[in-house]
Image 1: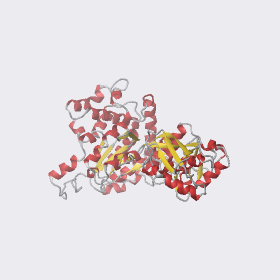
Image 2: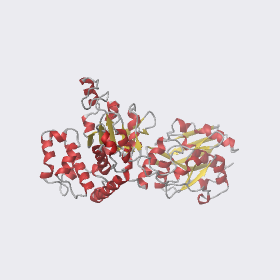
Image 3: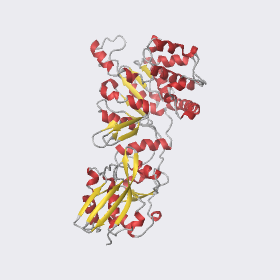
Image 4: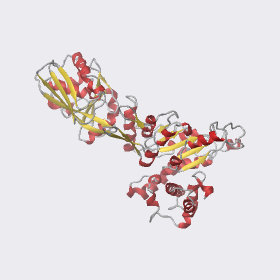
Length: 514
């Protein structure tokens, strides 16, 4: 063997952002040693043991000399076992067993088993996306990750089952363009939907209207009412009203799923917006992201471009609910660590569902309610004012009456979704120059200045509510956004007084107060 220096490539992920890493291996005369530098974590630092066993299994043992591996840039933390394949290829090439010139510009991702088999790893989609943006055109991944990696355009993906297979490619002197490529994966499977439809919901015209407004303008929604009236059914059907995701949006959604889902979980792009419903016992890290060591995405990021549904919202710990305030405003989560800050996207529609009291029976005559006044106040206070101020639509969902069973005029999701799609097209044309997709994202100062400022006769009701302190400035702006969505659904070019009154009426208690 000719000992020396060789290199190949890998990717270090920080959240969804990837940095191209040069994996440099140097073998020199000296006492046997195998060290990995460049801020590897525990899993990455254990790679030498796996590589020695795997290389011996394929009868290409690592030379009994001093082996030094550097993961450059060395100042960026390297996490996980996905560097195994790149380190093994660089070491075997430095030992003279592989063609150094061929593997130098190829990206390698995968974990090694002790017998040389390749195992799939998480985060392949964001890693390949980052490498593609930085000019990489050939990627070698385990067979388990091939379908996921091929979701990225302009990259040729080569699937391998073992280190022996990869070594055979490079020993044969094949150029990267000549490396074997398996069968193409179906990257856009047909949308099969979720098997639910808005027509399944009995009655509840006010809640259905609020659901349509939420889908139209991207407005957050709170539904309160006794158990069993259909709050969960309504929330689950919100995704059937939202427009299908574009390819770019689907890639954003599935990049997050690639980090937290099981290997093979990402095999194709489904344009259906995600629906995430965490349990009310979820921790702050589970909801917003974080955790010890690696900062992983939380439920708010898994719901990116879709719906985050918090059932029994008042049962969530108040400190957990407060973490929603920042992503509701910014559309992203920033998780700070000592050495770095990790960002995850979190542009979602928030839907809250809550009972009127802890026992859920405080409605109508409330004869069955057993809660004390103090218990009801404590229960209501779990949803803080600053959080509710960020929720545009707040509706009461009453019990269903038997007469509603005979009503067969309930619209299906397809009819409502068509109106939503048309209204969103109007919004895209109106706000396209500003970069806002829907009314719910438009800054308040834009709506309060020409050419979008409404006449005083239209805003009189919310002007008075603001003067009396019954409406905050944030609430004022959110009422205007709902008014624009109401007008868009009705086909009007701008909101009138009734549209503004509708927006105010959908903020609990403020319509009567105004």
